[in-house]
Amino acid sequence: MALIVQKYGGTSVGTIEKIKKVAGRVARTRDMGNDVVVVVSAMAGETNRLLGLANQLSELPNERELDVVASTGEQVTIGLLSIALSEMGYPARSFTGFQIPVLTDSAHVKARIRNIEGATIQSALKKGEIAVVAGFQGIDETGAITTLGRGGSDTSAVAVAAALSADVCEIYTDVDGVYTTDPGICSDAQKLERISFEEMLELASLGAKVLQIRAVEFGMKYGVRIHVRSSFNDNTGTLVTKEEEIMETAVVSGVAYNKGEAKITIVKVPDRPGIAAKIFKPLSDANIVVDVIVQNVSVTGHTDLTFTVGRSDYKKAMMTTETVAKEIGADKVVGNDKIAKVSIVGLAMRSHSGVATKVFETLGAEGVNILGITTSEIKISCLIEEKYTELAVRVLHKAFGLGKPANA
Ligand code: ASP
Ligand code: MG
Figure 1 (cartoon, protein in one colour):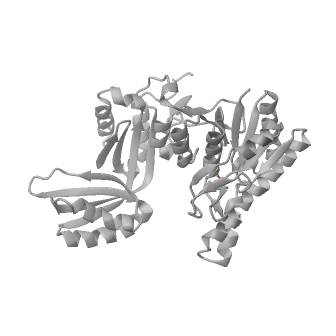
Figure 2 (cartoon, rainbow, N blue to C red):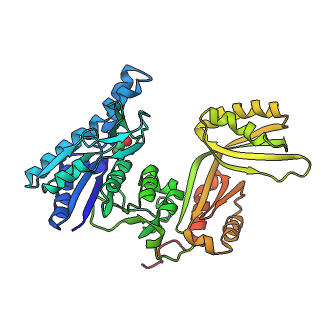
Figure 3 (cartoon, helix red, strand yellow):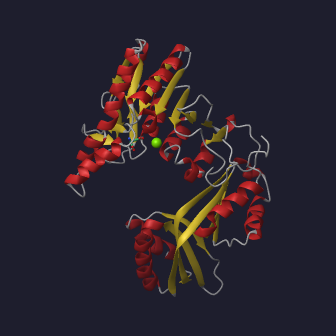
């Protein structure tokens, strides 16, 4: 007998009919002799509706109160699902974040979990009940309700699984699992059987649609096996797990892309200690997240420095950078806000040579110019012009043999 945590997202509990289906699946898991803890999101669209109500009253609602409002969506679904289960003859008990409690910091709207008390849920399980837990919500030291950020129920589920040392955390969603790339771009993209936490984090742009990144970080830290699967069928999905549990030998697991990037270059930066800090401090002070940073080797006492930011931060970042550029005596600042980043990710890259060369040759053969390159141990990312994104993804996916065999 196993302890299974199941998380159902908004689309899986979007209507009463769907809640009944979820109850059916939970009941089946119970019938197989497992202890079951269910974590649910609000019904599809509900969190947006609640936030919209608050926004009708204020452009910038008080975040403490916003959390009070937004957290109610999950309270509705835990009650409804528990009723549905009881109706089917399965004793169930609902728990809000503060009843457990799920202790978080006080960063309203994006709180982080500090601790989950397992005893409350465990005593329900001991009585033979199914525990139904509200995702997304917690409570801070002062007793205020907090929420974990959009998509936060995934993190709730993985954290609950960690607190209870569950055997697996199943994340039920509207897709079958994690794919080798966006099936919208490559129709032959394949579902991955298994993927490591590390790869999943690096594939953020693919995976984030499926699983909140913070949930993956939590899983990695506490070694929680996460099974991402569809709530609309019984297919096994993708198991996100420790590297040791992965047998695959493919060099590359997936091709990810991110379109919304912008690139800023400072030309002829004086090459002196402390300059990079001078450039990036004002950006971090302005809460701008810098992604890729590339600096040339200096030959004449000057270097060119290029970095990328999210496109929505582009204007702010340009202004900030122009000011610093003047201060440090750089030549000029040039930018381009139509940049994409295409990445290949794979654990086996660590022990294979020639992977980078293959990426560059593949893009080169298609006339795709590489504007910047960064690598980590298990990832190679190229900055390219946004209009080439789909082409780059397609040729890389093919070059590394990730597509389904033609007649499979
Ligand atoms: N209901 C919350 C949201 O829509 C949390 C979640 O669904 O994971 O973001
Ligand atoms: Mg989600």
